[in-house]
Length: 140
Length: 353
Image (cartoon, rainbow over all chains, first blue to last red; front, top):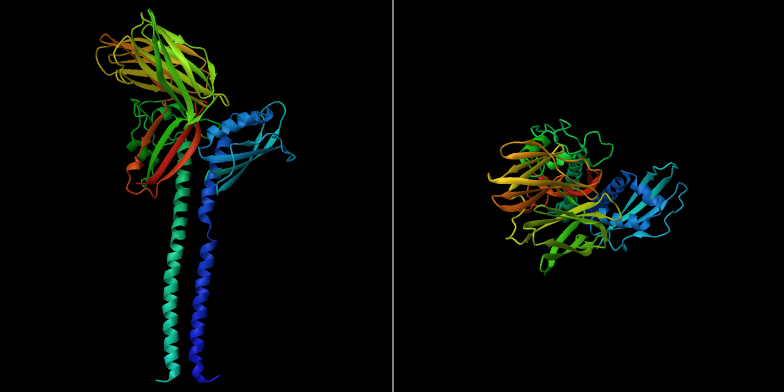
């Protein structure tokens, strides 16, 4: 290669380096997902707080012990904000699903789905421990 | 100038130009995300502050009970409570501007000790009760009034148990409780011997959870002129299970006083009487939810019946963010809280001062 061609190589180098810089920034910008995480955290926080309030006087475990799934669905409908749909599944200590009926207020059409896991214990003479999985979504 | 130098000059110029444009483009690309991270930090801080307001008992711990006490540190939680988000009945009542002993926004702002944070707090029942007079059926000796009672959460019907009370001059009636699926009618029949304004109070309790309680009131004229709005003649300040009723006009004569809950009701006993105000002891009903107090009286010769709830909810206090020029940094947080064993919805708005 003659000395005449050295300048062309530098131009190619310049293009390549700019390409690398652009690619790096584009990829890193797409990897940023903090906004969605924050919104999901808010939704999960709302769901967790609702379960805490229901559990504060033992009524959450009582709904489960009585297998009052309709009552549990109605009370969640009241406590959770309007526009939030939920789907709850209750498991025993062996992770066997307890609720025979669906505890839900509708389909999940929303983009954000938050997951809350909550453990509650009954307050009766016989001790029972329940693991609750609550899925929440904002209605689209 | 040799060709290689010209090539090198162009290459270097192009590299500098493209690097500069890459930096500019990347800053444009990343700025929304950088702002997002900043907003996330603000949101997290405000979320913690909103929890602090509801989980902290404040200083002194019993600042709500004593009408003269101004809190050094603001917090609404009930002292000694084992449950989170359980608020003190008196601290909450002192947020209501209708209460004689209410704290001002400036006082709370100082006690919060966060000069860069302005806030707004709203407390209300989880569902609403609406009462409408739909029909009147007069007869020779009496008139029957038909009311539509609607219970719902933002338009969605809520199945409830309803208990209603009718209060008029020398007249008190507690109707039997019954279940409503969200929309029902009740009839109130009053003899023509009863004169003056009549107060209908409806207390609704969710069928699915007895801790979810709400109420509604309706004042109507029976053989009399149009009724006045509530708190026209009396100013109520319930605090520490004592109801202070201050007369707004000098010629007021108080007649009867009642305390009403879902399962229980009683008459109120005067514990103190001064020139322009009367104090009554509020009974500790075991019911979850508010106790409604009704005082009847005469302003000169016209009868009135006015009421107040204890805890004094619904209420709202704080900055009006609706009028704010910039809402970009105002964050709202919703909580379900317990006051006197009943569940309420609490919304906290926080923004820069």
